[in-house]
Length: 463
Image 1 (cartoon, rainbow, N blue to C red):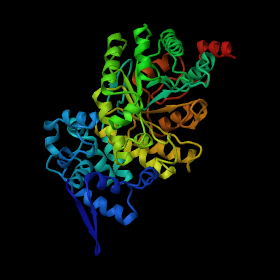
Image 2: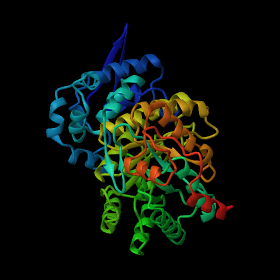
Image 3: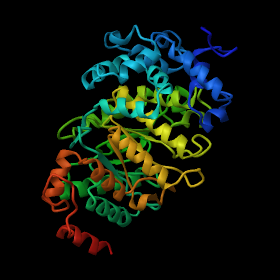
Image 4: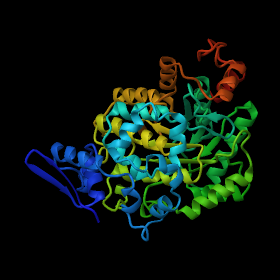
């Protein structure tokens, strides 16, 4: 195991392993302090960052942060590494790699070609020595396009997940939120419900309701009930019209075991979803959510800093060619990301690493009410992520999820950022919004002055 060192003035800082170096180089966050692996002060952090910048990228192929024999995520990362794709940057150090990423030579085509050659640890390492503006600039150059019933991730587009959660899974409450979201142009990424109950009966009811609504109004989007993956597999076996299979994932085998999953289970789920052949323009059938701190909260982080653990989760996601991936950046709480500054930084890191690794990366721009953050912090993160080319965000009535009890982004927030930056929904969904009269004609997304008749009748019935 290699030791690393860097001197500042008369003091030399030594780091006993690549794992320790990565942790000490991370920007400060409460989760790493909780785990006892963070730098003791800013000077040690800078020394670690300087030492990390001198590490050759090839080192990450030879010094695993979790032993190959011990962890199936490590085996996935090593076994599926594309040496040919890696070759153009194989001679670089982490610092050189940062400089190359920021150069004009690193354009969209070269970054797409490079993605299979990068490991999550390489992406995490370079992010640790980048400023926020660096993370924004490079992520914006990465373009990842996926398809199911519409096309997500195109240049000049920002999609939204319409999240109509209800604390009792009441169909009328869910339907009202769906109509509300559609009226604001939300829902092109997915109409996705977090069910209050994971029972197969409840999930079947919600899946069938979403399918009927999408079919009746001919909405070019996809649905998902965000239950456990094994429940979705059982629903498929019972004939449910499942579009996307959802699962929360993490960056170590032990953390995924805490979620009740393995790569074998995810293999089975993707095969089951593909067998239904429900996509009309593509076959990206998986939806994954992640979040910094999940491995630490399960005591399954193996001494790895939480941002690097998060990046390792993206290797799991990448294997399954998902339609959507998002980091639920502030959801776990201040024990892991203490305040608005830490949440903003983590959101930019996650988006950067996901895009660099070739994922259609979205973000749940969110916080819990006991964090030192507020909606103004979320406005900042939403805006800078949209500038960075984030694939999609959440759309929740009033930005307040009444089932999961956290604060996120609203239908209005999506309209704001689309207007400020001139962004549009997915093209098929945008055409539908114009055809049914939700958006007025023209190139700029503008809400119609009157609610279309079919949806007036729906709201009248619900009221």
